[in-house]
Amino acid sequence: MSTIQPTIKRKPIEELFVHKQLLYEPSYKTLLNIDRTDLHVDGPFCPKCKGILVYKNETQPLTGLVCTVCSFEFSNEKDIQGLREAAHRAYEAKQRQALKVISLDLPPGAVKAENENEDYWVEARIGQKDGSLQGMILMGRKIKDQSKKDYVQIILDPKEEQMRFDKGNKNPMELLAKIEVEFQKSKVKQENK
Image 1 (cartoon, rainbow, N blue to C red):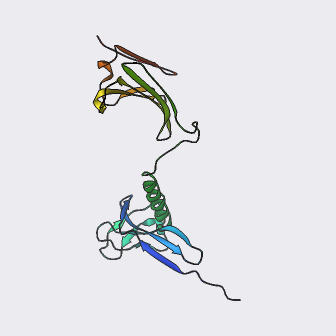
Image 2: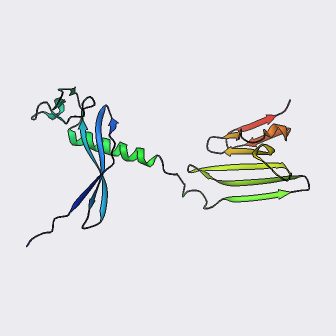
C-alpha cells in the first residue's frame, strides 16, 4: 500500500527577525493536498554574517553554538529546537499585536443615550476599547457647522479609574465649572478656581 506524500509550497516572508540576540527566518508553508498553511521558522542564524549556527559539541548541545561561516560563538540554555520554538512563539505574538482586542466578557454592542435642548446637546456612550470597558461623554453648544474644537469629549476608564479629556476637542473646563466622577475605589474631581 503506497501513501501519498503531501506537496509543500514555501512562501518566504522576506524578512529576518532577532530573538534573544539570534536571527530567524519566518515563512509560510502550505500543504497543498490538504490546503493548510502554517507559519514556519528556520534558524537560528548568526547575527553577524547570517550563517547557520550548529552545536560546538554534538554530544553536549547545551555547551554552546558556533557559526559555520565566521566562527561566532553563542552560549545557549536551550537546544536548537527549543530556541527555534521560543522564537516562533515570539514572532506569532508580535504578529498578534496588530489585532484589535475585544472582550466577550462585556455586554455586546454599545450603549448610547443622547439629549438636547434649544442651546446644548449631550451624548453618553458605554462601549469597549482594547477589550476594556470605556465610557465617553460628548457635549457642546448647538452650532450649524460644528468642528472638534466646538464640543467636549470626556473619556472614562473604569479599569484604571481615570478620567481623560481629548485634547483635540474643546477643553471641558471652558464649558463646565466642575466635573466629578466616582469609581469603585476612587473619586476624580476637576473644577475651575
